[in-house]
Length: 236
Image (cartoon, rainbow, N blue to C red; front, side, top):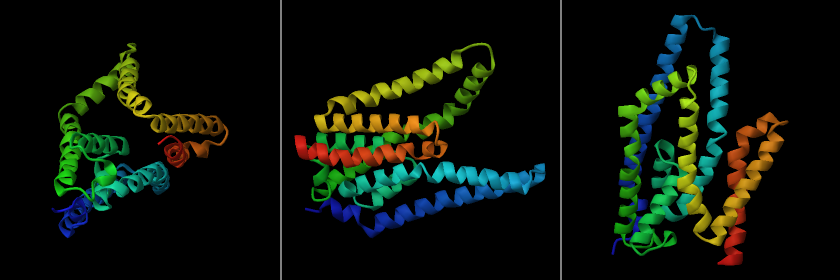
């Protein structure tokens, strides 16, 4: 029997992921070069460009701390290479964890057993993660521009449709994820509660210390993950 760890740590998978990431990086560099050239054509000052770069770096790097925590979580069950690809390009911790959990449950395995189980289990996890999320880019290509334009027009006009639509979207997201976290088991529920409390505390402190708002997600995830170890030890 070929174990999942053989696939998870295979040189071929590493090369494929590295090539994919290089393509993404090249696209990002090309976009920056074109944007810089266009700014010069429009007469945008170097100081303004520098301020934009600094603000973008802050808003991108700081929230990525939470992604790093998610990456470390997934490496325990899926190795390093595949989570590296998923969380670097299109995936999110909530989706990846949910997709992998559902897959191994359907196959009668457990997350902690993926690397030592048959390679077919790891392959199934990879397929579900990939095919399940591909709907997003397809829908974005076909409808995102029209949707975004419509929302912006609704917000500019007298109608409150834009605000209602945005609120309904986030409410739908919460309706999907919150029940799963609340009713899976007691440790999961308590971990979510800790994350909620920490987020509220950071929000209150963040009103005076504005810089803390950039770290709220990372702090909440870190404290919640640490508390999960305690809850699992107590109730499992």
